[in-house]
Length: 420
Image (cartoon, rainbow, N blue to C red; front, side, top):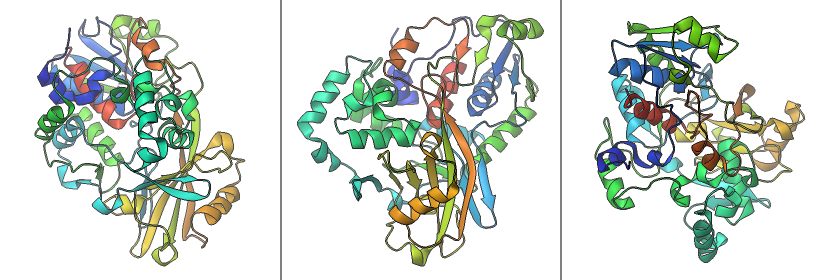
């Protein structure tokens, strides 16, 4: 059964992504969610809010909720370890509004929208002009061919350097190893499409944002980092009488969970990566580096730079203090987040510092520190087709399912709650 226009206006292009939900997800009186990251938290919140008589149990093996969402700070410096912002989507804006976080939620600075690729020793602007580098005819041919499904991003974007830069920046893998349907379902026409045209749908969606309507190309972020969202969501869950959260909890099997909580396996919601992945997750070390503004005059204000060359240990540098309205660095300074694929790094931090001095800023930084790491699931070519055809004994949500963005996670939780 197809989606209605109302569905498309509410959820947008996220409807192209399959819901990996068992038909019996709403059976019984208890929902058990495995994983207390953002996905598990939002799914639990949405189900519990819609069904006050239904008990919701969130099981988290770690000692805190939030998963990869974490904000580092030191004195006047502040940076998110993994997710730092959300692309425009009404579902995320709705959640921020419901949690009463609107006063600390802002769109990114208009002057910081430019992105670059570092190719053959030069910084290349990413924008509509990059189409001429690829070739308009080549791009159109690749897009048409990609619609048969199951192809890598390198087939969709016929310029290896550009394709690699994009996929390294999103999922820390080269474009030959990433499913085009997963990253760009609208371009490959994966799944069901809307009945109304793209521009008409976009206009309708723009009229549904609470708080404020974001401008084109902007992102949304919080004054004090993304962990603000986790803290508020955790507070809401603790206030809901039909929700219980169990930390430091791990079971040997789904059968054990089924027996302990008296639920069917079919109604369990798995909200942690790993179940559907064929390859190991890739690891990224995350650093912050801060400079005096006077030492960064050659670095233009912008969103960030991607480094697709395998001989460069860094895969991306994000201009944190340029992008966000909220404080990220002391006055007179700039802060950058540096992404380093563990597979290409020796483990010596001096190697990263030497690389920064060679390709970025030659001056010594005011601060340089490793603030964490991220594990990113694999999404090999054909991934979306494979998971769409997989028959599951339970439901799967989150980064290990059909989407990797924070917007996907939040919208998916809304879609799942609509099944109850």
